[in-house]
Length: 108
Image 1 (cartoon, rainbow, N blue to C red):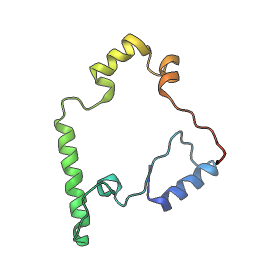
Image 2: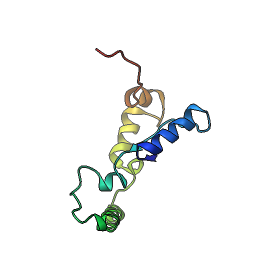
Image 3: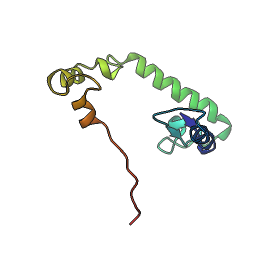
Image 4: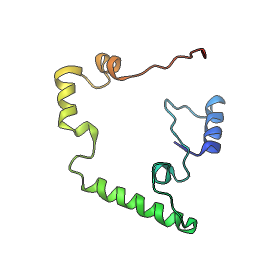
């Protein structure tokens, strides 16, 4: 994962130069990540940005820790879906139905 476009550029350079081998790269363009992203309330007092982000993160971690189901692979409904329809995780049917392949397209 790369935080910010400048770091994304550095990471992509490493991939191009075969210094890093990744199958997936996530770029977080918001300063501080989604916890301080465009969908969050604006922090008026910029001096408190770090403190507010830390409190937001702590709130999310607390909520997550209290959830009865925290891991998707332990979700009984997902388990049933695999058992009754998709078969083996990462198997042919699951891969065919759940994975996306990207292709270059010309602009219209």
